[in-house]
Amino acid sequence: QVQLVESGGGLVQAGDSLKLTCTASRRPFGRHFYAMGWFRQAPGKEREFVAAISYNGGRQYYADSVKGRFTISRDDAKDSVYLQMNSLKSEDTAIYYCAQHESGAFESLMAYNYWGQGTQVTVSS
Figure 1 (tube, one colour):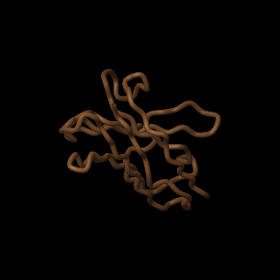
Figure 2 (tube, rainbow, N blue to C red):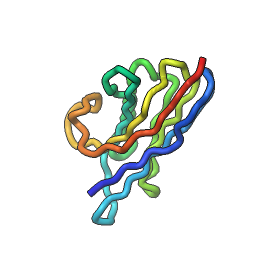
Figure 3 (cartoon, rainbow, N blue to C red):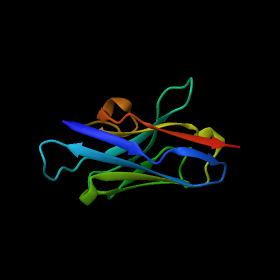
Figure 4 (spheres, rainbow, N blue to C red):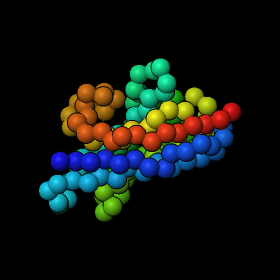
């Protein structure tokens, strides 16, 4: 049983920064290490890959649209994954979801078995 809760979304202006947090609650208790990902879904569009981080934090993967602006990180002591978003653009406006990776390509939605409810990010131009 896994629950993922995102937080940190909000309304910002273009060029601003925002940091999203995803905290996991897992049962049974214990140290669990999974690759994690962030996705987003804009109104009228399909959910798309944003970033992923390997189970030990050693590798990060980014969509081309956010490369150089977003940074994914994790703190396993807090069971949390973060998405630091800098130089935000209006096209970054979307609901952002974190997800726990099960198997398969990090960019694929089908590779993830648990999802959070999402947090809204709105960037005004």
